[in-house]
Length: 419
Image (cartoon, rainbow, N blue to C red; front, side, top):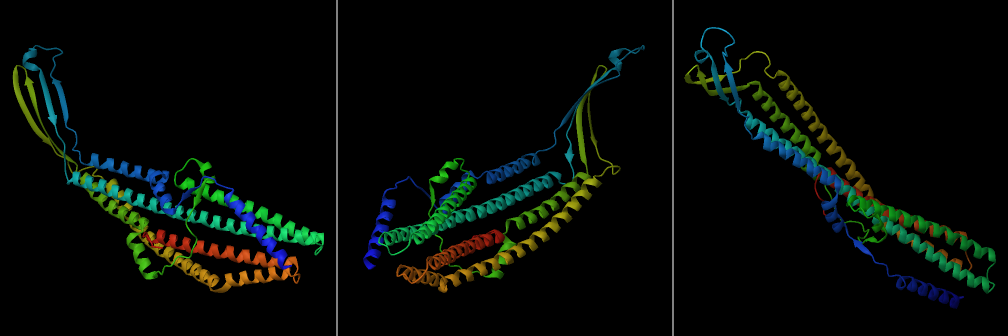
């Protein structure tokens, strides 16, 4: 029996070596850092947000310009009938007028433009951080899918060894054919599991390529994510995280920038209520005489004094202040939720590492030895194998949840957490 076991082990090692050295595909290794670098250059959502900043910057150009002057050409007293000579009657004029805005309107308009740019830049930061969160999570989804694929491939290889082992036992008359068929059927199930895991891995890599702005989705078959799925060593403080969220979170900054923008808009609308003073100067020919004229047009405090614009700006300020309070509350709530998820994932990982993984391995090895000695049924070994697979898969899913909770805290606080 011992010699049969040794032959089976040598057969497994040989088949593994052939599978490794017989395949030499061109592999494109992608780390999280290289994925992030490509993402910053090519992600379309981030590029669109950058263009929005450019649109806002165009407002700055217009805000600094003065009103255009106007020129009036006139002809008066053109004779239709009568006895007065036309040379003594008609008048021709040329007048140039330059409006002058009151209420320091140019400065107010410039301030509104600058704060509009600040809002757009804050929104760009918000889009960037949310897309980075999606990228990091998708990257580690790919890593998890690769690990789960490896587990399923290992299970398949283990049962392939059992098939060969039982084939040898059957040929020597130690077991019935039905026992061999049971193992072969289980081996087929693992083929399906490997195929499903390969599909999940491929789909995760396609999502990763989409986020980095890569249009060649055939590349998903060539790339390999090379980060390891190991539990990060990080200790976080909830109070400090909440302080960081209120100070650095992008959507809080957007809401605060919108409050400032609303305040500047009120100033601009108040300046518009004061109107413009329009001095003018011109030339006038009366009959055969040349004259110069000058004057000024001043607004009267009657009628439309921009009451609607002022009321609208004041209402928008109240909305912006309410949204700021809402953004602060939402930030604190999301930090709290992400921190609790972080604690839960951390404790789950520790529980697996404290003994569950080792116990599952030992149980499977015991059942394998017992089965090879003829002291256990195949169903007992299959159950032990499934339990070990489930515990290992759940362990790596817990590590993935651990990473995700940290990425969620980065998103919720607007700061980077060193892993």
